[in-house]
Amino acid sequence: MRRLKSIFLTTGLLYLSLYLPVALAAYCPQWYIFNCKLHPRCNYIGYPTALKHIHELTGFFLHKNILPGDWTPKEKLHLAEVRGILDTAALIAIMGIILFIFSFNRFKISAFALINLLIILSMLLVIPFFKTFWIKIFHPLLFDNKLWWNNSLDCSFYIMPESFFKNSIIFMIAFSFVLNVSVWMFFKRYSKLDKKKNGREKSAG
Image (cartoon, rainbow, N blue to C red; front, top):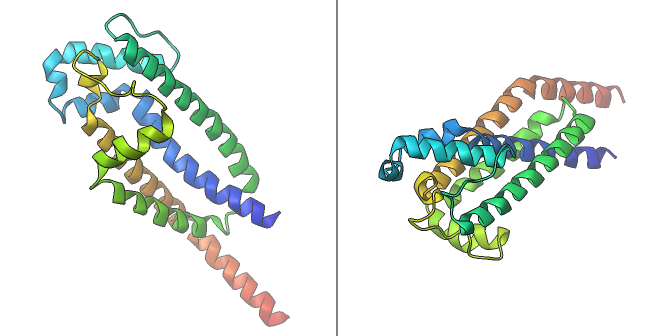
């Protein structure tokens, strides 16, 4: 049971620390707006139109509205698939929170946060080869079609170019890294106390 709880705690912390930035990037209009200032494509359709599409998309992901006629049938199908993935990820996150609470151990979590930091930092390896990763690995793993290929007729072409997703991956890594560093720094004192306690018990034995 202890080993199972350790697995739940490690994977729960890792999943939640990765899911939170993904959810923020997907559901918050501010992230799309911020990226509009970093790439030129929003200027092609004008900022007011880009802002309109951004709110339509985030509302769609949150099940608040449907995508209007400006969005092409192809991208509507693809974004419906994406929304399904986000919904599943949210359900897993809820389960992850429950398992995280069930398995929480303040004496061990700092060590698990350090393990997660190594995993998170390894994700930086995809950045220099992001285009290859995005086209050859990521999308074929998630989708069995080519609906994700966008063109100049698609609204997503202007508000979500390749640089948007690259920035989102960097944001996810940075957010997760800071979160796990914070967990490690906050709980490492308990880890030290646990080691001292175990040392005294061994000495007494």
